[in-house]
Amino acid sequence: MENDFQFLSNSKLYAGGLDGEQKELIKKLVDFCMKKGKRTRVHAIVYQTLNHQAQTKRDGIKFMVEVPENIKTICEVKKVGVAGTIYDIPGIVARDRQQTFAIHWILEAAFK
Image (cartoon, rainbow, N blue to C red; front, side, top):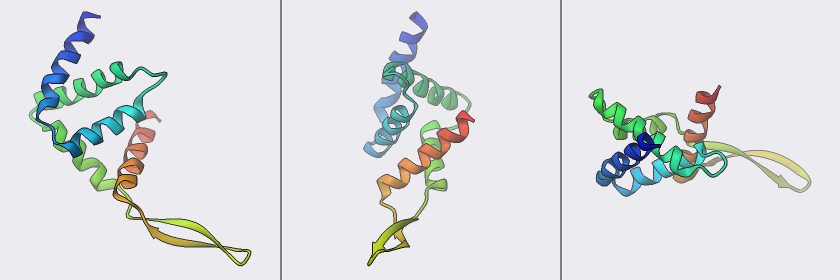
């Protein structure tokens, strides 16, 4: 228990220099990882991971922002019904949805 508190106190210090986009990305990551409402525990694990990456001379925040940028999708196929016939129409994906897809795919691959 004492160890978890240490991670939380470090995470608050570590979170101080983040901009809005980075905080939003980490919030999405925490929300996707959360099981049975254990947000505090997942938050501590995510920031512990970022602190560990920072100690290995690798910027964890920059890494967390670059990875979804590299794998996000730009377009998706939507089904549209016209006169009783269903067509597959390509459409552009919103930026927020692109990040959501990317985080979902990363975590899905990590849990396998």
